Image 1 (cartoon, rainbow, N blue to C red):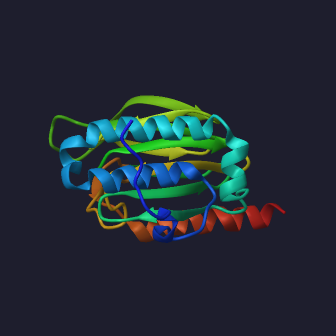
Image 2: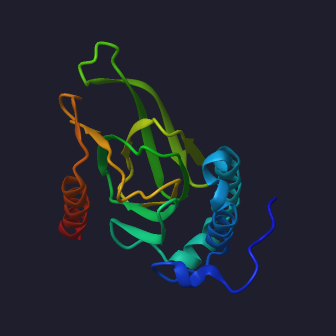
Amino acid sequence: MPRRARGRSLSYRFHIRVSWPGIGTIVGVSLLWRPRFKQLWKRYQKLVREVIARAVSEPAAVLKGLGEPKRAEVQKLYHASDLTILNVIWGPMMTVMPHNHQMWAVIGIHSGREDNIFWRRLPDDSGRVEAAGARALSVGDVETLGHDIIHSVTNPIPRLTGAIHVYGGDFFAAERSGWDSETLMEGRYDAERMIRCFDEANAGMRDDR
């Protein structure tokens, strides 16, 4: 385990205040290793997975720090050029189209359930993808995604699902692809469409009340 960063708390770098020490560990090590981050990313991803696994093994503690999910949203916990940490809340029965990240990721579930379908490009250079595998994630589960992974996400239950997402880069600035849910054809990732998905999920929750 690398030495912990010396000096004052790193909490001043967070976009929102949280009382979850795992974030401090992840960010602190990234700052220590920043000069050699590209060479050490595999070791760092393994460390991140260990930290996230420990955290979601005690979901009540995570929820105490982050707060109970109340609406579908993406909460920024930390955002830098080489690291992004999010608390992603999926709406009931919400589905997100196939997409890539162009960076590695670690996902840990702290409430609800998240179903992932993994996709691969067809060899005919058509831009289409086909299903290649799947994994259902429940509370306490962790999934590691490689740089080139393509996946879609569904929250299959009628309540909110929460997950910590750690990305090895600037999640919001990366040039990414999305695949049409019907044709499975590749296009540019549509951030506005993603925002609409969250808005529609929240509107559906209001209508069900």
